[in-house]
Length: 329
Image: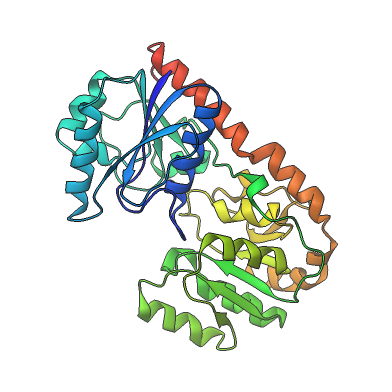
């Protein structure tokens, strides 16, 4: 198939730090090319293309709607694809000519965020079943997010006695809850990520002033941090659609301690890659006792089997083929 993969117009693909959409678009484009398809990736300048993928970029300047419009026009200027795989956070819906393009080309739209779903979007797939339900879709079709396990460092048995938290420091990620858990468990907390809301970040720091903030770190450093830590605290509210960092942590041999809500049960295998609890006190009381009891290499094997990028690519390929055949869901 001739496949156009439209990434987001927010960050280069893949992004150097936080940027799950761009990471997934990059990995899926590369995986589809490996399976023999003619793949074209549309993304911002400073993006890179996987082997076998042709890259088309637009300048990373001006308002977001202008960048989205330019990407749509670049697609229209080329011979049409067999299918469009849209990861643009539905940017194409607001790109004028892009909407017409999407109406005439078979399309699979992967939803990554919580932007409203436009009426014209076709063949929606979500990062989890829970994600679809957040959008009020009665029977959501999941394309569960995956990771390239081979790109994650091997588990390290020599670990520091510390907990780790990674993500954007915004209210629904609930850093303050991680701060509280670490304090209750009497364990050091190391955390990293962009902090776009300084007042919120400051309020979190007051909960646990001893926690160590590393700032916004690149992906490679984040992975190394996971290999060296006792456990990952994943404290997002049930508004979190999925959680790539949960899979990366388990692949690095770092068990995930999270709340039993939202999409977490779709990604955590209790006792195998982590544990889920109903409240802060249960997590704090359990984490010190059980975090060291995991078979870290078995965790990695579980992630590769259930959530490896090859599995995701094959499932995406099947959805794209269904769209080309004219199916709608």
